[in-house]
Length: 330
Image (cartoon, rainbow, N blue to C red; front, side):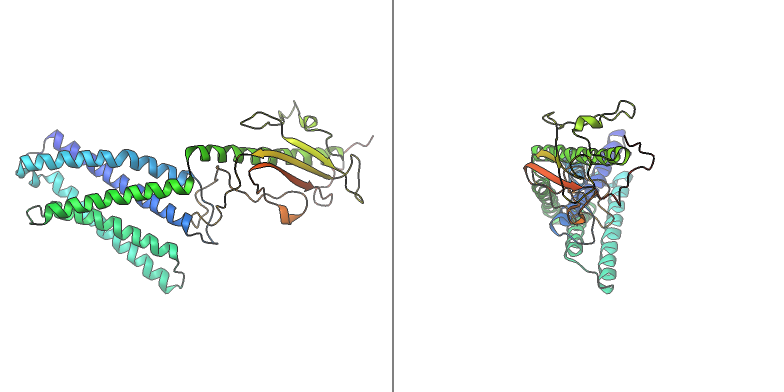
């Protein structure tokens, strides 16, 4: 039977939707497994690792279901469409990729085990791939052997099993990252930490240039460099800055210690080790506590915070941050 444009685009659309959806589902399950089975050698978890695959699955899975239903309806009306070249190529290509996926999965598991590096997160990832690939493979295997007496119930069972895997991954993913409001709060907190880091380094630069700490944050404003002290990104209120006198230190403005304070929406998230081994794909922009060097006691060099008003104590070490020798003393 001749392939019509309708047949071509139905099968092409279903193929694209299937492959992208399966890739997104595997990615989502891997991210969820990473989150719930942290590893000290892994990087940071970041919100987009869950948000993107969930967004794609919510859109693509219904499209795939509709396209498969339309294809199945055409085949039921005209059984000769089972012999369409594009249908056969699609089925056999999918089965070929499923075999490669399962084979590669098992090879990875065996290789990791022999190297003594097997972990819980690896085992769960292997299980996830076997379940996803198995459901897809069985569905399309019995789409080829459609005359088999159990073909229809097997296809229906594995189609629903695939949908359950998708829904479970989405629900667990939402639990991991929280509500959109939580993500918004964490992004605001992340911006607050970034602002305080920026202010901190401006204070250090001020000290190195003038050999004293600024009396107030407005002293840091510089029209030439373009720096303006940032304010809270949500409430637009000023960050709090306090000078702290320290006895026994070289002192021109009451000491070399200061505080930077902000009002945070939520506590810092424990996301270290919950990403991939290469560091989670980049900067996590939803409130993670990023280790950042600062002048003073290195035991407090992170910006970890609770919800509510939090102050960070900082002390400049003149040996690590010496005054610019060109500084003019009055």
